Image (cartoon, rainbow, N blue to C red; front, side, top):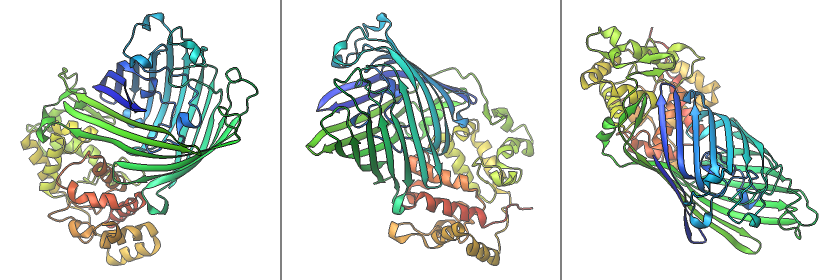
Length: 558
């Protein structure tokens, strides 16, 4: 995988990152290693929190990042997930401290001096959906003193420290905090000017039912006394912003930053900075035709599309009392390059269950051929619901689905128009006869009966979320362009010729499919009619609809 980052600053052109990154997956583990021209912030990001929904602070414009990261130049890094599903990871980075931004970072002659930035980070992301997770991160770092690259123009003193940051969500509220301790002075990205910055704040999701979030944060910075002439004073700040979704992938964020006792402007007691940021979140665009993914190469249980690109962009304009002082446009793209590797394993681990092509052999009897499928999808093919109320893996129910829909789903996983870590790999093990057999077998499972009209009325009377979902399912939301679900999925979600069964499907799976339509990981025939639905529903609306459909049928067909 070739990665690059192109930035325009006052209309100058610079390539900050151009490096090779290799991902290796085996069963539950994943390792990513990279080397080449790269900035520390590619992996260990001191400017913002790890959640890509938000930045929480405007970084160097307001409160300095503090970590003495060098400018772009030679670097090597790794990231290891012992079990990708758990969200826990370990990451490390080694970077040349003497990178020269005037040479666009492509001069590696100073690497032999052995003056490096060393960073190690451990953390955990507990994902609820794409770019939506609780998380914590602990980073330790050390920076050597630079011997070249105009060391007198910025502070230059070896040192190290640590940074702890995290975020926790409660319903629509998100609390976040970050603390850094540092003894170094220097770095190439902007210089390290502070010992101990602190950020604490809270965000509110989808205010006024507008997709996005509003946040307020309090900030503190203790400047390094040796750097500033004369008496120094601690700097405080407040930042407020509202991040608004313009589409599934485009966001605009107006905000204001108030800085009290600004350390870099000792003649002022208050600086007011207003800004507007427009950002496009990462989107994957496959170069290949739909059938090309079947010819991608497998390493362990991992697949790589040989022709795809991931990109995003950010444009920021900042304004103070004296007029516009900063304009920044940044484009980031990753070119995925596929190549052949020998397959180290013909099986995949799903939890503690090993699945291989032999499990689906036509030489087995019918019950044996579907046994591994039922180990995840439930003994009645009811998904999570078959395992009891405490199981929440998001495994879908298959009973009650039409044979054609199941065939199309397996084929979509195999061709790559629908992606899923386990199902993309498993479907590649199946030939056409096996996929047809599986579709017939699971279509034969009888769906449980619907609850009676009286039971549904009673549920609507006592369960606000059920009632909200029922209203959307029956009436849609006309002012947001959302049609009623019953038009395609049937009066109670029992399915129809144009839409799959939703009744009895678990909440987590239904929510995940809304995210899949948004992210592009599900690009099937159902994608187009679902786009206005996805665009017009808030996260709370989706939760209500999912809860409604999970509740309308009995839990078991027995």
